[in-house]
Image (cartoon, rainbow, N blue to C red; front, top):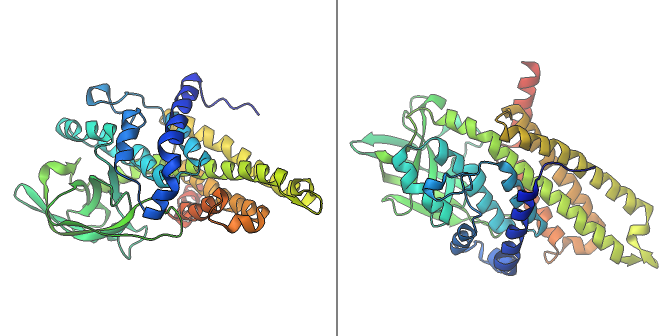
Length: 382
């Protein structure tokens, strides 16, 4: 079936980005996996190539191109090479963090932060999750109480992607602890802020090259000028950003599944058993038929959701659907692909094994899939 999502400019961008990944990232991926972090400098290299924060207006150093299809290309190329260490951090910076800095900052904040985000000199993260609260943001315990020209921030965050590399952490806090969602505000906590410390770079089942950290705030002194938008409006800002965040996760999931099928097709053509390629066995062909069909069907919905996002029409419920469907599909498909690789599928040296381990978290972050079902179910019965 002919795919119509991308145009010539996206394919030209794909070529440039693929060249960058093959030259600057892929040769170091296993080394960075072992280190548990990618070097901060790789973001600056990506910035030099024009691969960061494309929607930022030209006056702040960006390309002024607000078209999520360019992000989709990046997801496809990152997963084609299995580069989740750098890939998850970069797409978080581009797809998830950037909209808050574009839409909820004043002119002074834009001048202060956006050029560095475009260049890669300022890496971003989002501090939402706290120990013990899961998806229930109303129970946030991190407080930010105003004291003159500063907020005094106390609390802790965990499972924070880019937690070590981040220079700017957009942090969800309670400026009114007596309220639940209405007490939530967003503020940017910068590297070097007094009272802000980073804990462990957490050891994970997958995504080994992606730094995921604990963050601690002990009477951290955050200037009032670092508040994003208005006090008490933070939850609304977060809800507004969730559709694009979940679409971004869906692109990672789909691209990973597609790559897994492609790697497996090549493997079963070459691997022999009982005097013939294992791809000649009916059971293998049927398994791959199921996988390829799942990937192709998911792609149709994913492409349509991307067009809807560009048109400003993607709903919260549709974003939950595409995140739910693609991540569940990713788990099913990659599990079958590992099985078709046999013992080699369980070896970390193979890309399918690493993709399988990396995939498990997509059903958890950006809202666990159980939460996606609740969002969809409520919409169905509304």
